[in-house]
Image (cartoon, helix red, strand yellow):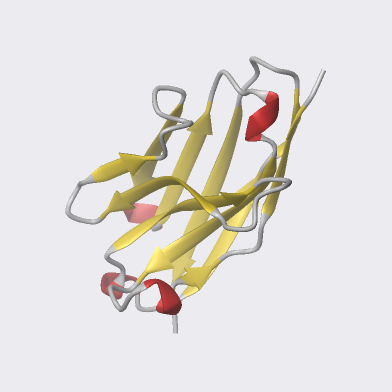
Amino acid sequence: QLHVVGSGGGSVQPGGSLRLSCEASGPVLAITAMGWYRQTPGQQQRELVAVFETRGFIKYGESVQGRFTISRDGAKNTYYLQADSLKPEDSGVYYCYADPGLGPDMYYWGQGAQVTVSS
């Protein structure tokens, strides 16, 4: 069974940067994509932040396009989310996930990482 561990997050001032990490273990060859969703205050559903498909395709949520960068270290089965030019509206809980290609209901989720952007 896949196991996903997310880390990083923290508190920064507007304009600051943070890096989140997400490491997968277990049958990692089954993973078709990894990425992050976030839950921000007042939103009922999680919002896609970024996803990195193993075939190389990358997609960002509209609100983070141009400010966030997702990358991976294949040797470590670890993905990174570099979040720059952070805004207060980026505050929330960031959840990393691994997609074994069986649909959203079968995603493996890491623990959430709190990101707080405030002056």
